[in-house]
Figure 1 (cartoon, one colour):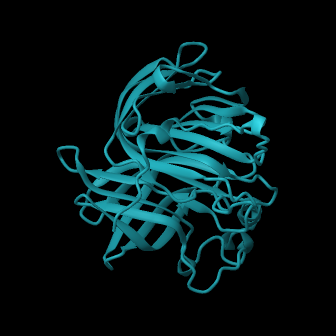
Figure 2 (cartoon, helix red, strand yellow):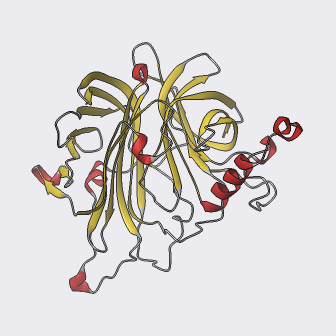
Figure 3 (cartoon, one colour):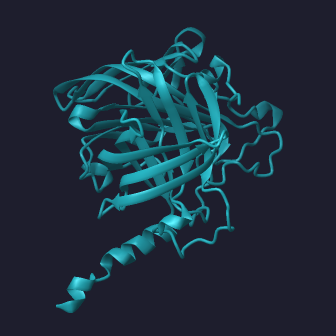
Length: 364
């Protein structure tokens, strides 16, 4: 089946309410730009984010660079320059193609819809990157990511949207004075006019995980592209069992699709099984995914984290970014971000379980 593609100019879409016309947007309205890249041989991941809040207007965001698996707290990561309150970014360049935040994250679109250049230099000059990202998939319209943002929130005139695109990322990273080459495949995504509420307690749904993957052939072209966001399947004895009530037979994914041999297919079923978690943060370290496409074919993937970190982007949830090494049934491997979030009900239950004595401890 075909998949909707957004026009390239949506890369630059950053509308503000028209106060002269009496527009008064929900204060939870956001636009976002997310970019990432990884250096798998050094177990390094990058989370680059701008969250625009047009009702004010202001923004938050910046740079999070993490390495390895032992990043329990936000400030454990290798480099963090993330500000909660910044002025609206400076919009410059021809036709508004360059976006620069107050803390120095720069996003340039030499070719909107196809090429983006992300760069940054820290205040002390010891950390920087300059990475050009070139599209390897179309600018696909994406479904909602955060639970609840698919609602209209009483504003029938609001026209929300979002895109996802896989990119070939090439450039350099200097992390605390050490330089690395960047050459990887990574997704980017963005939203506009979404309403993402930060209500205490959140939306009553299990933890969700986003697992984009791009498997390249020896020439670097697409062999298989897969993308989904879902929660653990009920038949896997998930950690959320007993905390949430789900209708019998309800789908476990918010959206999912794949591209094989140039053809985009809708995914109708996802079964995700978490095998291991980080003992202190509860972030997923190993998992399996089964995906059934619209033709009835089932695809299987296994993944293991090589880097993971707690990220500050959404304070009322536990939010984690990772670099996963994925393997498909044909033995192809790739590295990509894996991101997951959950709300306080799940976090409290996990903390309580972690504090319970084990069977061996109970015998002593």
